[in-house]
Amino acid sequence: MLEHVNLNDLLVLDIETVSQKPNFNYLDEEWQELWTKKSGALNKPELDASALYERASIYAEFGKIIVIGLGIFHGHGDDLQLRVKSISGDDESAILKEFAELLKQHFNQDKHRLVAHNGKEFDFPYICRRMLINGIKIPDILDLSGKKPWEIQHIDTMELWKFGDYKNYTSLNVLAKCFNIPSPKDDIDGSLVGHTYWQLNDLERISTYCKKDIITTAQIVLKYKLMDLLPQEKIIVT
Image (cartoon, rainbow, N blue to C red; front, side, top):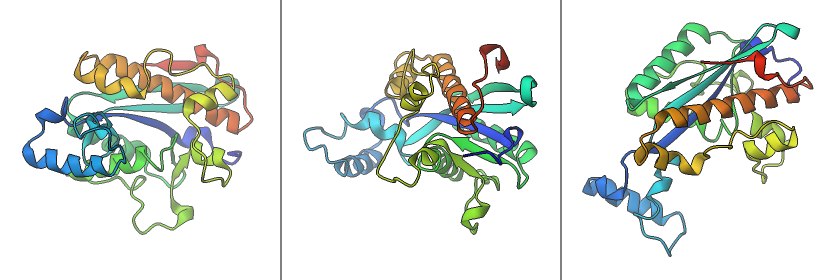
C-alpha cells in the first residue's frame, strides 16, 4: 500500500485539542451566542448549548491545540527506529510557531510527507486554521492552496483503510486491535482530554496519551508496508 514511501521521509503527527475556555459560562456574550448557534446545528435538541460545550474542542473556531505529537523514523532494516516527542503547553501560539519552524527547517522538500490518522479531516485543517487565527504563516507542506491532488504531501492512515469506501470511519483503536498493536487508549481517550486539561491540570498525561497515538499510527504505517512492528526497544520516546 505504501511500498514506494521511504519511512525516513515521513513525519507522523497527532494533535490534542480542548475548548477555548473551561466551560460555556467563561465565554463572553458574543462567543456564547456563536456557540449556541453552532451547537444548535448538532441536532441534539435535548441538550442546551452549555451541555454541548465540551464538543467545542473539535472545531478550530471554538477550540485550541495544546499538544502536537511527532514521530520520525530513522534508519533502515534492523537499525530502524522511531523517535517520538511532543510540543505541548498552554500557549497555543508558541506551540504552533515551534511546529511551523520544525517543518520549515526539516520537512521542506517534495519527498517529505505528513502522516496522521483522520489527518485530512481533522489534524491538518485544524492546524492550518489555528495558525491563521494566531497570525502564523502556514508552511508549504501543510498549505494545499493551488496544489494539484498529486502534489499534496499528506498521508491519512484512515483514508487508506477505506479503500474508496467513504461511508466508513475506522478509529485508531480498532485498527490497532486488527493489527495486534497495543491499544493507545489504555489510560485516557479523546473524550477525557478536556477534563484532564481543565479540571485536573495534567498536561503531561495528555502529552503521554498523544505520544501513544503517534506510536500506534507509526506501527500501522509499518503494517501497511507489510513490515514487522517495531519492538519497544526500537521506539525512543522523549
